[in-house]
Length: 261
Image 1 (cartoon, rainbow, N blue to C red):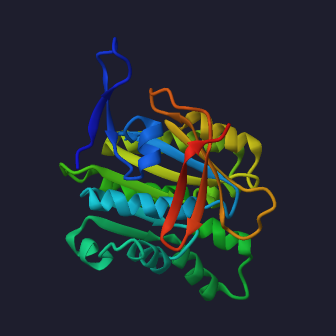
Image 2: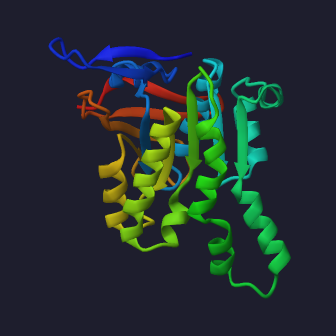
């Protein structure tokens, strides 16, 4: 699916190509979907449901015929595959078609740990595994691959990379991600755990991203059950600032259609 075009205002002749998310509420808030190309930052505390939302989005994008490169950073690829299969996605078939590719950085880290025990320090294991240059190397072929179908790059999450670098480097990393997104004419989804990294990193990520979606857990909830979602910015479109409740279920995320007052 090539996406749809949307004029940002009646007097604006410039058009933004939008990739529908397949989630009715998100498409309503964003005016039709995510801009393409665009680097979208999905931000929220640990356990707020960012990975759950990303997998639901990826499932919808695959149904639209998109090509997806999925960096598995917080969970191994096997877990992500199961999550997509829960959305009735024929993962093995789509992988065989070449429309879905996993970069299993989590399992690479586990392998490094197994090989190094007990000599290597945990920090050294992460430094060898979570290198931003590796993301670029894996994504180069995908970005340059000629195809008429939309491309989606997923990084879930980029938090470990930012825990291992100086804040000033984050600006460089996020900018390079935006370059890669433009080259591929893709939508890049990158999740970031807030309240873990330095606030300057949160601000840099939010300010440099083309779109920002914020998820917050409900106050007092320890286990993952639900929270509120707010689209802070999305391309050149004006987006509502009010949030919407969501609930995590076995079938995915269920959103309330009534905005918070």
